[in-house]
Image (tube, rainbow, N blue to C red; front, side):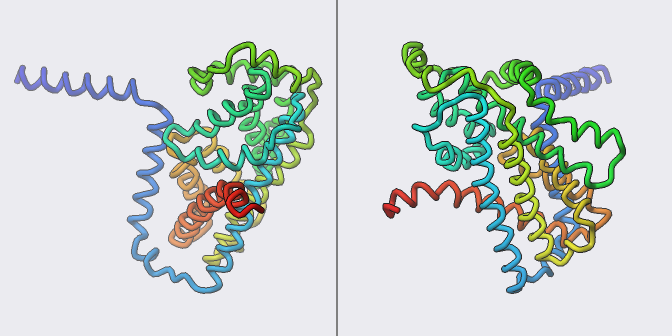
Length: 321
């Protein structure tokens, strides 16, 4: 009995030690993937009965078009953001950099698109400006996503919180946020400083001290979220469930799921997290099997649009367009 208690104690010790070292984001992602897997398993028969007709293909094609356009819009928003922090981008094709590196977010770790952009930008801009342009982009996306959440009919506190979020992009708040984000995301820039200080000094003329509030970038980013939502809505319509819920509610829940997928995931592209939040929030409003089919198709559509967007400039170079 004593030996068994000792063995049980060792097991519990190793379990708690494992949990203490487990990445919380990875844990949440694993839970979401398990939840999604259980949902698919429970609705497998209904899912297998779904038929892909011509109407569905046309809706999904429309979802792909809006998803693809949203990536280009997101790239343009990043370009405007970089201009707003005082960088001279005349010698850099920012949209090309964004599209070519966006696909790297699917690599393990979920930071490689940031790493490649940083390594490219610091060749022309100061290290400080390069870091700022990388760290502010997800913050801009977060603020744009929060704008849509109150459309679902939440209470006054949600309205105040979400619609006051653009204040974090004010200069004072922005400097504080950048400082905190640098500490949190330091691994992105660690061991990526092979450019000597002489080159950095020479590249200072591509930057200026002229910093403005990114009004244009925020507006374009809001358009990006809306186009992203349209891609999702078309996938819902492909399975005839888009009209079963108000557009205000659907874009609100979509934005919430998209934001959580942006912040939390350890899986590439927020795989599992976005889908689980949608299932949790919309599962009581929409039939589960068509909703699952819509989510699976949307994941396919959005991933394919990322891949095609990454091939735009290589294809142009290949065909001399």
